[in-house]
Image 1 (cartoon, helix red, strand yellow):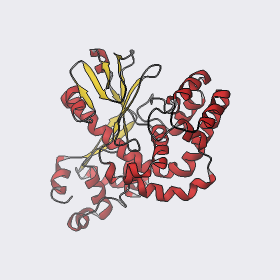
Image 2 (cartoon, rainbow, N blue to C red):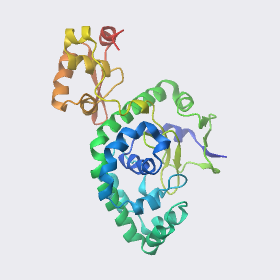
Image 3 (tube, helix red, strand yellow):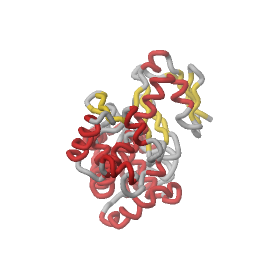
Image 4 (cartoon, one colour):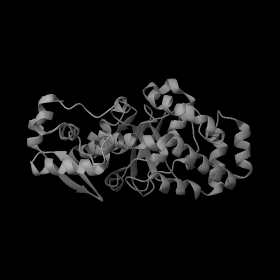
Length: 321
């Protein structure tokens, strides 16, 4: 069985990437319920498990079963490339109660008493769910988000280059084995069937670390969205920044060597700071030196500046990573 989307040329032209802190947060509820499914997240689980005693996640667990359909209103497709959690939480809070009621009624495999309470007053249920998401975020996820953000950002930049260089065919060929592009139709291997076209607002592709290794889809009444497993998830909880080889570190300094090695993939100052455990100001200073030395260059993409190595930087790091 599969989802089949027919993409017109204008749909292909409107393909965009984004990532979502809310999607990762909601997907992590499944990680809590089935730790063995995602053993790579055990470091996070060990860190947050002692904090769970003070949280009431029963309603969220009711809406997000360990597998199968979860209530879509909890994960609205991101409407900007890099939405922040507060903005996404506001969208959850503003959910039409009737839509939330319909979606909650579809959920299977969870406590029916919890679902019945939600269905009895969906407006209050939406408010409770949003409050629980906010508390869960602050207690168990916010401090880890910069690390997840950096991984998702690297994936989006890599995929965006693939789309620019090889078009939709190259992009979808490497996205996930469950996704097949025929040149007109996008087939997504899922345990139910759906056939139709997009509904005029393009397709948003969302990498995910906590939904890994599965794919997910959303469609009308939401924007069409395909969630796919992020590359490199096995490195997410590795401790510390990348190593700085002795010779390179001696030449340009340890922190600058680490940053230069990390710039094998374009990254923002904030993502580098999170990865290097440095302040954004310190990273900016090091980037200034690397740019002045012709080893790195910045390029503006929307409201952000992405940095990457130059050819000279590539040559200097050759054999060092």
